Length: 113
Image (cartoon, rainbow, N blue to C red):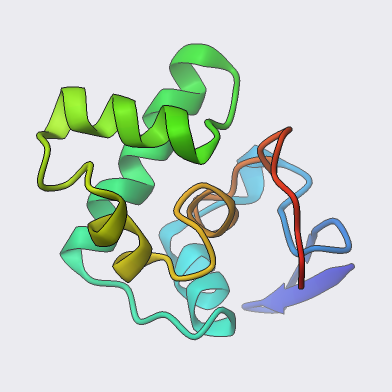
């Protein structure tokens, strides 16, 4: 699957996850979010940047349970609350968040769409 941004062709898997981490930019994130029906706010960017930093440190995309624990520890219980994260990423903070952050799909992520 491919999508076009500024006349550049960006490759993604059939579910829309970028195939190359190097292709990701904030502009691409905005386009991916738009396709997901999300208008990115400062709160979204905080989680997106958190996910990208976590991936760079660990080499993995976290599942929802791990993400909630890690965000609670690093950013506080309000931002690590399941309700807060799902309000930002209704299709799942791990699945949808990683997709917009240009990261691989979490291994234990089941896509029902």
